[in-house]
Length: 240
Image 1: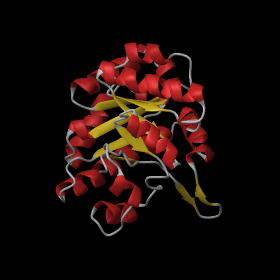
Image 2: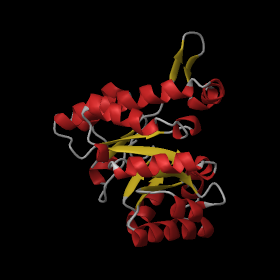
Image 3: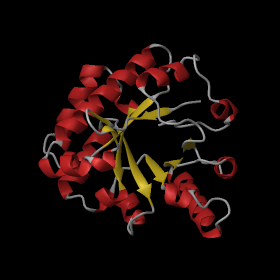
């Protein structure tokens, strides 16, 4: 089943067409525009997921990315709570994702913000796990609910023995710590089989479902559009 949806921003530029985040997020970070932009994404994602929950998809959670600037805001907790109050989404249905590199550059305020949000029930996820050099420190410092195995490791599974060993170790570590583990970037059936065999809780990737607009996502959620891979999936699926 589909457990969650990750909201990713795209810019429909009037001249250049559809732009990926890599083409404009850096500028938004530098100018500070990332703060209102990120809050807008959070609000819209929470609003839409809550609408779908009210139509019966109660298991859904909304996953949104937090930028460095957002994470360091003195009023971040208040802003997130306002979004939840406005949209009606329960706190435990919102998952805030930060990359490992952002986590390791975070100040005391950022860590305090995450702990305060966690205390209110909001979920915290470390994205791109393994791309930095301080993964274990992140587990110790942050109130983490989920770990996402970076696609750079998923790509080599199951044929690359090192990547496979690392992926299996992260899954085992998550199970020991009681932390949800998500494999992202699954594009081949043999990768899916590997993570299913190792009891990875959730999967994400083009093999399962490609990125969708709100309208296409609604079709998938409510049976107007099907994904054969989702129907065959045994463990829970995070389609994001």
